[in-house]
Length: 195
Image (cartoon, rainbow, N blue to C red):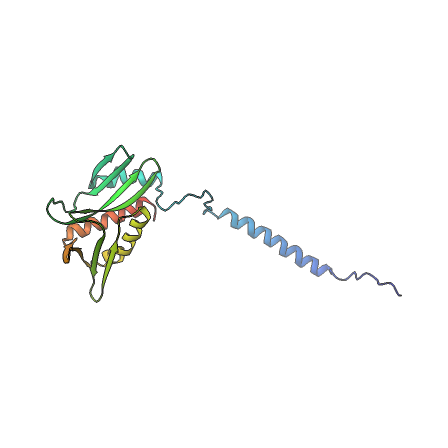
């Protein structure tokens, strides 16, 4: 049986040169892109949905908070902010949007606070050509944020809102001052959590 001769021309000098160039370009590309990677992976396991940065919190407390009525809840370590231009009445049905700052966890939450209305809430939004009814239960922070996100497109379009009390629909956020207060609360909240 004849012996096989090793094939020495498997990696020709041209192929070796191409591999060196490709390897050098790959290493350089990885190094260059690693310098521009400012987004870090969150491997802590914590939910950062409600997390506020120190700069956003300071901006809110020092600049925007003057537009709000502040209530301190020392028992819970939280500050509640209700917009100063919201409708205030002890006899009317109201639905306030509140910003809650949790100093312990360094988080901010939104809360829908009904006055004269019990949970669950049924809210109807009417636009120019469409209408939608929302059902809201009293829930946790994530649920309240989801409720507000459902209402947000309607609020931005200045839709007419009504809330169901018994079997009767009553107007909700019907003055321009109330609508502007709701928009200001949402704007301040999303800036606070960095969205």
